[in-house]
Length: 313
Image (cartoon, rainbow, N blue to C red; front, side, top):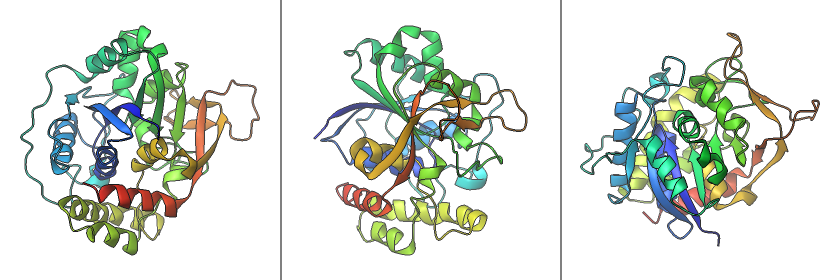
């Protein structure tokens, strides 16, 4: 069984919450060094609070949570309350967190962790806009070569966009940050909408969470029920895609997923296609491959893994 040293960079979000819980439910495989919050689904004031709420729900007050960048590198922040509700975690009421927020800035924590651990030993799981990670790369370029790999939820190819016709939300919010990360040379795995839209909840799957009979199971079921309403209406699907848990599931069980090592470029200049992940899936350019772009998953195995792990919290 592989053991991973991990930083989760996130903008919780109900699906981010489930991803964090999945990581916390996997201590034999994941050594969680810290959770770094970034503005995205909701503003930073809420994402850093939500990260602590989630850790406390899992009984993990020991997890270090760091507050990061409150806006993209070059643009005004775009948020997604229309999907996640005004708090980002609408759907269930949980108490205000008592665990402290760490004093160090998330960007500095990322840099410090990479410089003070053996090289190529830390995986960054990126669940939101890539502002914190790109800012760390800009502030101290030495850290780029020290990252083991980055697994991120973001982008799309066959599924096109979910915030614009061309762009997925996480990349759209800070395309300049995404461009920095995609051009950095780090080992990169991309979990796009093409995959996450196949990880759909259903009545049976949501009730399996509720049937766990724990505060975690109840919260996940209620978050998912809230989250579903937007996607069902928009896509006419049977349920909602659990985007961000796919990142942690890939880390735990990569055999559930399949994809291709291809070139992916980030569009930053066009008003029409800002934030588009231009994925050379068919190899029609001579651009150098820079990312493993995941295209499919076994949804039954994904939900089995998720439910079994959450049952341990």
